Each structure stands twice: as structure tokens, then as C-alpha cells.
Image 1 (cartoon, rainbow, N blue to C red):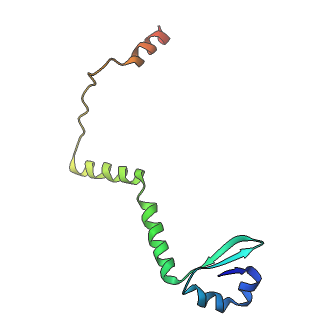
Image 2 (image 1 turned 180 degrees about the horizontal axis):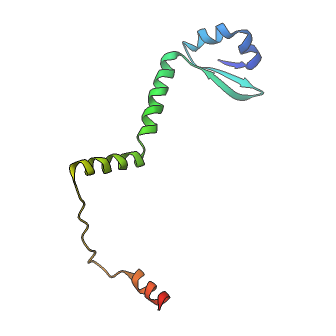
Image 3 (image 1 turned 90 degrees about the vertical axis):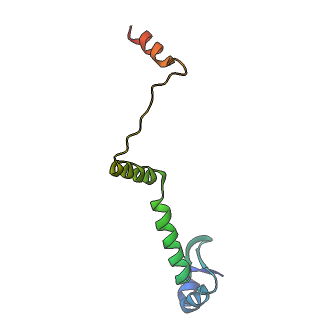
Length: 96
């Protein structure tokens, strides 16, 4: 159900009771300003938020670096042989 702020304040108990069944949206001048939800939904949201904040690509690479360091792993990168490096010619023209 949608509520205006003043109405939600006056009928706060109803807002909380109804939130157990579905989110209660509170508006101020036709702009959504709050949502009241049940505690279980909020716990689910907090768990999701914690999971998504920890699983970024940067965090994954950091974990990979940590594991590689612990294992003593070193990545062997072979020299490139498939084609010449065009950038070297450009740098030679600029510096010369």
C-alpha cells in the first residue's frame, strides 16, 4: 500500500502490521521517500548487500594474488613472437 508521510505517521501501527505482508511505500509530495518491509526481507537484503560488496572483480584479483603468493606461484610470460611491436617504431621516430 502507498502512504503519504502524514498518514503513515498517524497510522504507524497499521504500516508496520501491513509490512509483514507486503512492502509499504511512503511518499512525500508524490516522491518515494521510504519503504517499510518485514524483518526477514530486510535480513535477506543485508545478506545480499554484504555478498555483492565483497564480490567485486578487484576483490577476486586480490584473492588470486594472495593465493599465488602463499603458493609461491610465479606466472611465466613468454616473449611475444607472433608479430612485431608497432609501438617501438613510433617511439623511435619520436625520440630520434
